[in-house]
Amino acid sequence: MRRTTRRELVVAAGATALTAAVPPAWGRLTSSRAGIGPGKFLDGVASGEPGPTAVTFWSRLSTDRPRSGARLIVATDEGLDDVVATAIVPTGRGINSTLKARIGGLDPSTEYYFTWQSSNHFSPVGRTRTRPPAGSATPLRFGFSSCQHFQYGFFSPHQHAAAESLDAYVFLGDYVYERGRVLEGAVRTDRLDANDLSSYRRKYRTYRADAGLRELHRLHPVLHIWDDHEIANNYNQSGPQVSASQRIAGYRAAFEWLPRMVFPAERHRLYKRLSFGTAAEVFLLDTRQYRTGDVDGLPRHLIDERQLRWLLAGLKTSKARWKIVAQQVVVAADPFGTGERRDQWDGYPDDRARLLGEIERAGVRDVVFYTGDAHVFLCSLLASDFQALVSNPRRVPAAVEYVAGSVTSPGTIRSEAEARTSAPWIQQYNGRDHGYALVTADQANLVTEFRRSDLASPTGATIGFERFTQPAGLNRVAREVLAPSIDR
Image (tube, rainbow, N blue to C red; front, side, top):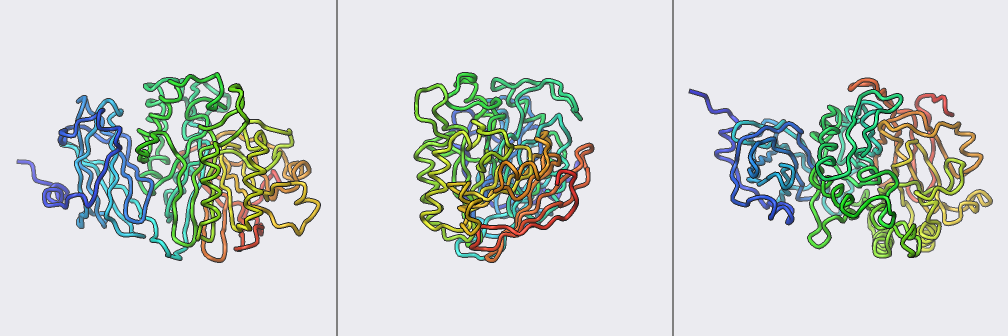
């Protein structure tokens, strides 16, 4: 006779969910009556959108059944002895057999462990963390990265970041790359071209097979904003090259595979505001979905009026020391010396001038932009009038921008001196290295460390090579070189 495992005993006597919810749109695609069925958890586990008292949990059940379910178990210890919540979560082919539930009633600033159970399998044990409560001055640690192209290297930066103590990890876009052609310099192969729901789903599964990415998701709650390659290179809402059905397919796959809940009235809305006590508040932007002015005859805008007003109101009313704007494309003017790049804020100068000008006029200090897309490590001072920063060195910048390199995607290699010649507001430039950014925020300083990795193996070494200390209230940085770079 098979002996009952310890985990089975825990589940049998376990708690019910304190509060539990699944995405409303899931209802018609699954069965609320589905019980726990057979299947394996071959795509790892994840958590995301941490709140002070709630977290979203994710996995995927590999099963032959068209509709099934699994049990989520949440505990305060890695051995799952102190179970605080369980919930039976439905799934089905209509949502690619993904599992998603948001568990509430948790304690703030608390580490939790979780696993998923089918009738014949347990997932790996994941770890997550709730956000600090309002008013907490606890220092915070975040990781940021973008542009993880599967073919150009292993995601070894994620393996390194997984081992850090973090409150959250933020993906700044290009979580997957839609094209599958074989590339020069490729370290591994992905031949799949994604352009419909089935192929986008397979693309996410290919990327999630990377050991570093799976480990990062297993150990840290994540936030994700998409950019273009989750759909197609340089697409936008007003462009002709991508059909509405393809956009919706890409959006749907992203929501299925990331631990994110939907807004009830806006299924594909990404932008939101998350407070991490008084140390930092994070504003997630969507600079891709709401663009206008390319071929639609409308005024040229990077984000819509509602999102811009929402952001400005949030920055002006925030009680946090650091107002962190996590977004996709470079804000700084002409960082590559090539003039206007229409796919970045350079291509929408009126939106940029309005946003930075409003920050300046309101006297909002300690606004920081963390940016993806560009495939370079870059630190820049920002202003509504960039030339005024050069002509008047005493002028207070509107904000500071940190571009957190790329995980693997090739960058524009040029010397830092050359970059500063065309854009003297640049504080640092490195287009050769790849990795991620580690951020520590407290009431006195925001410290951003750029880290580079060896992409040739899944466990390639990672080291910090630049550190920027930004004292509160100054909107300027002190730079410390931790390791030499041939790009300097």
